[in-house]
Length: 211
Image (cartoon, rainbow, N blue to C red; front, side):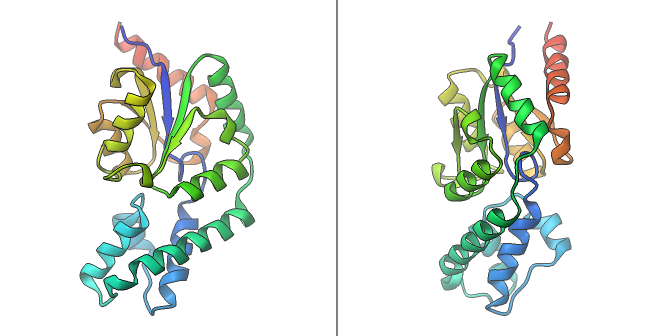
């Protein structure tokens, strides 16, 4: 029986309630050029994708020039950091869960479609950055989620088999990436789902089923 040895967390919508922050920051940048993504389209099409991929999709059905993508992306990252500084705070259930899991011997990591600076800023403001062995951003892979590369890379870095890894994800793109990497997946519906009891019980189910 393969026991769970490592737990990998998505960030937005799992550890940080930041899905709306990314939506607000991108629209703040887009409005400068007369564009905006609706709430419906954000939830159905764009949620969980990296900013440059969102801009590619938007340009495919609108008159947003592709030449503006790098500048809009840069603005979006600036606005995201501003929102993070204003809104991101520690969450006790996350601090406790991560500390307890680490004490119990699990290796922990974050794999996010966000850029590295955003991950660093959010995890630092949330007071949990030092609880992770490492984190990977969309800048650390050639293909972002829903491609499994980021999770495959994390599993290889831990030196374990995919069946020894549990991934916590909240959206279809991340779930597909983790599943295709061969990991076990715990679907998160809201950030409060991420607590020690829920995670410990999920691990028990996985290991009991493998007996």
